[in-house]
Amino acid sequence: MSTLDSAGRVAEENPDVFRSTRRVAFVDSGLGLLGYADALHTMRPDLGLVLAFDPDNMPYGPRTPVEVQRLILASARATLPFAPDAIVVACNTASVHGLEALRAELEPAVPVIGTVPAIRPAAVAGGPVAVWATAATTSSDYLRGLVDAFASDVETHAVAALGLAEAIEAGDEGAIAACIEYAAGQTPAGVRSLVLGCTHYGLVAERIVAALGEDVTVFDSPVAVARQTLRRIGLSADPTAPEAGVDGVLLSGRPGALPASWGAFPAGRRLLRRAAGRHTLSS
Image (cartoon, rainbow, N blue to C red; front, side):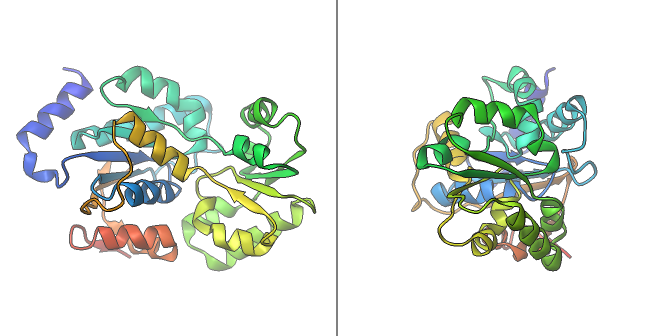
């Protein structure tokens, strides 16, 4: 029996565990998926959310492509008993190394949506453009390929926001401030557009804007990914739909509690509110 057959059987035999008629799963190594889940839930509050983190193996950036592919496949498979209508890979690294394998295994039964830094709209808006990303991403062929494809005629600067994703994951306010200050100091003067090249960074976008100034426009991907997800499952945005919430939380494949630490970020606070009464909180 295939994995998808098994997931369907679980859904049929255990209908009471599913609180929502339709749901979307989000997979990432860590908190980067919060902004993407929040964006989709804002557009379609009636969709249930399954949030799959991988704390045992994060961060993915330093890992080999083969390791990343194996880990993201395991996280996606762990969501299948929830019978998701789609799976969003809310991680740039995992999208680069695992999206093709995920689609080969799961589609067309379960659409898989990846993420990509918003370099194209930033370039259209006009340069100079800066791309904040992890150290691994800033030196990657992947990022160079995106710049060559979508911003070849625009002055573009890759800036390594050293330690920022880790600081966000830890909820360390002092470290977050220090990392943003460092990356802002490495960003050339005159930059007009800033692309957030790591899904974690959107959780502190307001603080990044404060560091760079209001003349810099920040480009991120959650809204675009949410729209693409709705297209793939045949729905349109309806912010007035009855609210569902968080149907499940997985931690490296294991059922988990909602971390109270999400409350440090606006997107996390909204998700905690939507999940109130359905899950316990962990400290």
